[in-house]
Every structure is written in C-alpha cells, then in structure tokens.
Image (cartoon, rainbow, N blue to C red; front, side, top):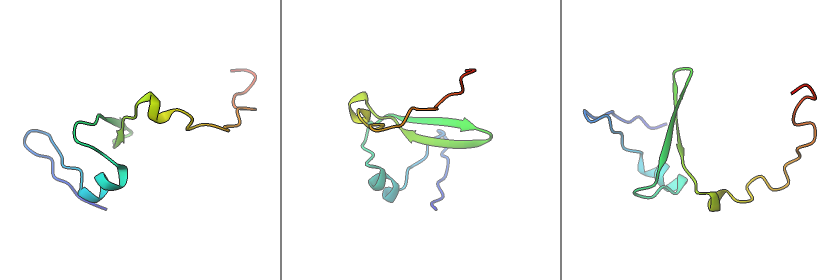
Length: 67
C-alpha cells in the first residue's frame, strides 16, 4: 500500500510501481469516482482497447423476468 500526499493544487502523484503495473502513460485520462466516501481511480480505456473483453460472457438469467 502506498500513501500519497494531496498538493495545494489538489494533485496527487500515482506511485511508479502502480503506474508500471497498470500501464499508465502521460496524458492518459483517468476517471475518479466517489462511492460511500471511498475514492476509486480507474484508467479510462478506449473502445478499441475494451473490444472483446466480455467475450464468452453468459447472459442467460442475467436479469429477472420482472425487470
């Protein structure tokens, strides 16, 4: 677990090992979500990068009949 400091400009530096592991590049868009007081930082992927990532997903019984 890495701890980062919020700057006076409200910026944070993503630790090097996390950037490498996630394949983050300068200028890449990142989505920041807040849910129940917890911040989630998610790298935004292009449609081309996400193509086929749910291949083989079983959609049978995905929703109730009442939905």
